[in-house]
Length: 106
Image 1 (cartoon, rainbow, N blue to C red):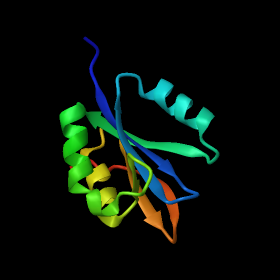
Image 2: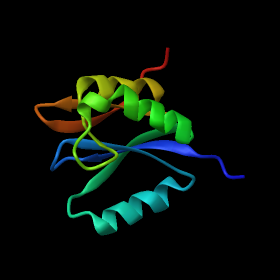
Image 3: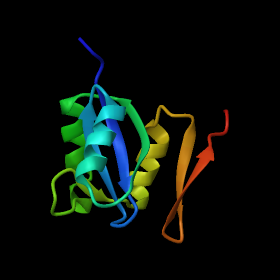
């Protein structure tokens, strides 16, 4: 069985992040981009499954947009992404713009 990942995909036009699961993140991003009018950006991913996804949806419910798995990209969600992201960078939102920063080694 393929490993499943929880991904964080950002829409800058709505300042929203999608928290979803897939076993092929690249293909999922391409599919979302095809059906989405705004430019999307992968902020990162972590190993996860439907249980982790549902737990995060409950945890961040107060940021949930009216359209399903999309959430306001709050400081709390940004911190979660940076703490759990398996990609080797951190995300910083400054004046409404997203910047990708190299993670510092501990």
